[in-house]
Amino acid sequence: MGQMIVALGLLFGASAAHAVEVSDAWARATPPGAKLTAAFFTLQGAEDDDLLIAASTPAAGRVEIHESRMDGEIMRMRELSDGLSIAAGEEITLAPGGIHLMLLDLPAPLVEGEPIALTLHFEQAGAITVHAEVRPPGAAGHDHHHHH
Ligand SMILES: [Cu+2]
Image 1 (tube, helix red, strand yellow):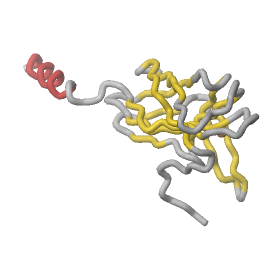
Image 2: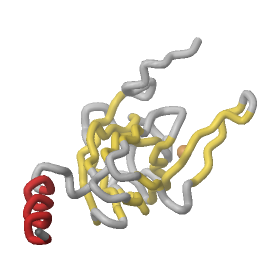
Image 3: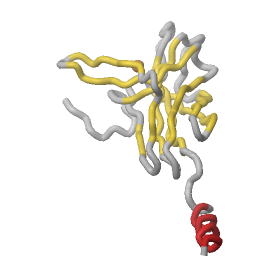
Image 4: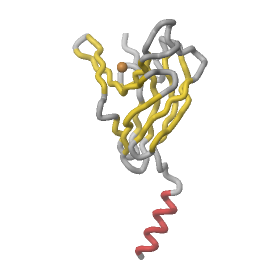
């Protein structure tokens, strides 16, 4: 009986995601001289919980994981120094006004149409490198909630 359960587990395991998936990565283009920008993507949780510990890109001297929050009328950012946890099966979309990667100490501007490589370091999944599209500075991504 025990063996049968193991066999079924393998069967179903084959069709489920074993690692976190990263999709729709993009970063905001910068005007000349700007030293920082933000990058965004969608995370799809795996079978087990995972934690995004850090990120890196050749396009920035360093990368921090940030969260934006409204503090009264002022938008404030804080670093998620413990990383970003993603529960099994959960989907998290990083977007302007929310969680984002802060790209700091840019050696050169990010140019629209010239994608950058972005490496995300997960506790369980290890390093995942994706290409992030570079979109115009005003791009709001897939945020359909516009408040005017
Ligand atoms: Cu930030």
